[in-house]
Length: 305
Image (cartoon, rainbow, N blue to C red; front, side, top):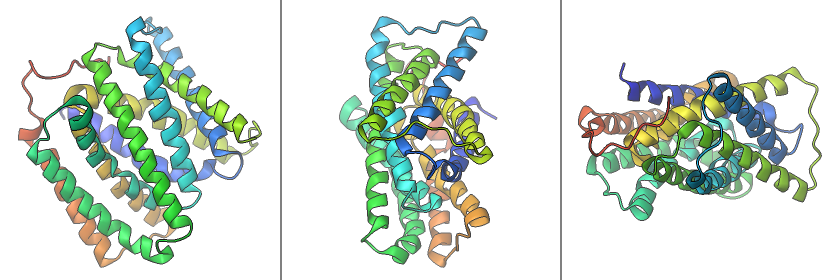
């Protein structure tokens, strides 16, 4: 298995399950508090791992702008919106709507990084998105375009915008030689601090539920969903760019819908099966050998250890 494919599968398998795990974080405390707990714990875990390995924990001076931007876009705003959307929508539906990140990354890489839009990547993104739309339609018909479904969808789309901007910041940092691990750890800490401020502004109470489900889900989301999966995803960005790395978000809802089928009783329709086929076809276009190959001189430095 190639390193790129291994990073891709790691991100997909972990994040494909986190949509359902987030359900166990809702209701007990304010979403902003849960997000603060999650990334505060994740930052401590990652910094502790760096110290144990004798690696630098403090990023260089030129990295702090990226640290703040990634913390604001990726580790606070993005996830607060996701948690708020999950309060209103089934986890599988949130995951499907979240896959719009792939196409947003392609467009934002063109706008902010002046990267050419590779025809095969764009075609794969469009084919995959058409499949996502078909997967989404049966769910949308249940609630229509009014009420909590429409609000939840809007929240997810806003979270995609925030996550995509965070991905662009990571790619810019990679080109500037920003070390991935310490920058990610401090971005998580910065995001957690921002969420503390948001929670205080919302009048939230900082309590910790005395339940195994909340503690276990928080541990899984912090260690696997935040540290391991994000490092895999950011490593992909540094190696192959935000546009192709963002296609991780197209396969995630497929796994999330399978989990939703098993644990939440998701019902598959003909449109859903066709949508799945299109999503997989689009993924194969993006993951084709010609798409992955990139001359060494043009490749972004891989900063993950």
